[in-house]
Amino acid sequence: SLIRVFFSMYNFFSDTQTRPSRAMRESILDAEVGDERHDDCPTTRALNNRVAELFGMEAAVFLPSGTMCNEIAIAVHCLPGDEVICERESHVIFAESGGPAALSGVMMHGIDGQRGMMTSEQVTTAIRPNSSFAPQSRLVITEQTANLAGGSVWPLDQLNAIAKVSQEAGLAVHLDGARILNAVVATGISARDYAKDHDSAWLGVTKGLGCPVGGVLAGSAEIY
Ligand SMILES: *Cc1c(COP(=O)(O)O)cnc(C)c1O
Image (cartoon, rainbow, N blue to C red; front, side, top):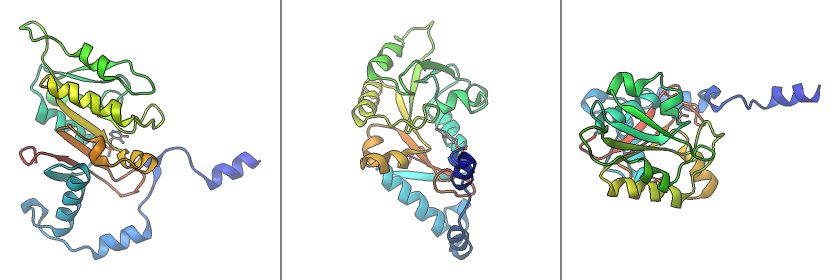
């Protein structure tokens, strides 16, 4: 049928099915290499610097997966018993095997947003007052684009307002940017503008780009 022909030509299952192109494999073969462990691999360093620059942050580190970027960021920002505020359908809640609880001992405070996106007012309401009884609200996570919502793009104002109220309340803000460059292409707004007032942010290379593994986590030099 026509439908079958259409789906044999175009695969909309997921951008996770993308594969490394020949050009990418050739450039991997030809890449200059060094001791990455001693920060002495020029190719890895160039990638890290490029992503730090894209986000307007001090430093970045290549990690084997996007999940590691999120989980390490949570561990860096939080202490056990802390609470993390994010949209209810965030990747950190629905697709990381309970990693925030298992690895960092944090509680997740999921907010019912619209199309995967919460508002700064909802974040303000979710931040708990300091109390020896309540968990400490410590971190807010945004996700550009919103995966489970079909890739909706957070408006810049909404994202910036969340980062601002969180920062003013003394919370850290982390951007899960697995597909942030999709938003950049769609709107022409830079990753740096989307990541404004965030403490850490990462972008994925395995989805649209089709790299075999990886994500690059950016933040302060101290985090690095
Ligand atoms: C895919 C994805 C991740 C995890 O990235 P992996 O490289 O598959 O571990 C995290 N967050 C979002 C929004 C994603 O789409």
